Picture 1: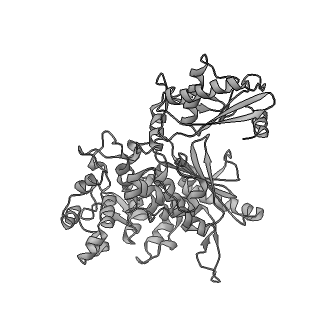
Picture 2: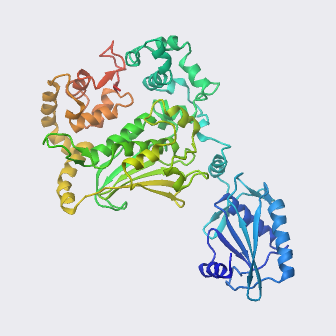
Length: 526
């Protein structure tokens, strides 16, 4: 560091990573040790001795003062900070004396405490005490001492898992074993859990317990509940997603085209499917074939979106109680994932495949349910398909933000879409008055759809039908489905809105042997 560097620091004044002290003495040594603790618990920084923090006056140290200051700083680093830290001390020659710069690195053994046992962190140019257990857990998590997805969720049991998701997990996890027995995984999807358990010679509970997903007393971990839970938000209400498609380019906009509701709640598989469905129904498609009736290609690579969404679900912080947020603007897509990048990972390193899983259970077992390789190459693949993805570590909001630009969205195109988007919004979100007035017409349309061949393709379904299928990623009752799409609960609407999707093979019944059972629910057929 040079004299010019000191002058630049002086001109920019104190900030989060730079603190001034005119002198370090035995009278203020405790305050200085607290600064060391705060910097160690945050992102590190410098304590510059020889500049008055009140007036900004530069007052260099004499040779004797330098000797005393460096000795005192070293003593504070070993005795005033618990556990002790190492300092990098540099003396810079100035006019009239020396400025001492003590560099404190970001600690790898957080949380650090002062000699009185108090935890401090930086808050702007100042510091503050930490009393919140969530913050302390977050620090332990950064060091790999605590993994929040391994924590038990009090009051849960194996009964709170979704049987179909557990079946999918087992079929994927033991795929090689089944193939060696020359058994078809597709055929096994229709077998009972007992039959599958007999084939692997283990109970589902035993498999989950042996892999750390379920505690010995039968309590579910956060990972088990989020991956395979029937309704995780009953216990973990904040761990969901919120999706909004705005009109315009401002997050403060009051007009939107589409917006998620309670239907977004569910386990990780449901969250993934919901977000992808939300993105695909709100993004434009570009015509890439000469055939006028061809489906068109999504304006942003679906492969890229899939990787980003999967990363957001698996690597988000499960200490910060906030939803994963997905925003669509006219000119960009933003995915906000709670929690900053782990300390060992930088913006550049993630682009080259470096992966340090924050949630090891979710990462290790999610591969059996979500579309990723587990090799840490998701971001690299996303960049391959969409090179101009932007990443941001937002330290103020404590979230990792991925931004994908939407190309070639002209003003005319935007204007032309407004009318169509409003119509789509009414269909998806529903204005109850509008739905009531249009209900008879939709009933007739859906009856016509129900007569179509059972081999109809997914692409030919209406937006409302696709919405129902997506909603049933976790089993839903007929009443839940009809209320979701704005219809009253009666046998006619069940016959017109739900039965056709069952007949076409897009929905399956949880109790196929008892089609009229009061406990009957419908689920998406994977």
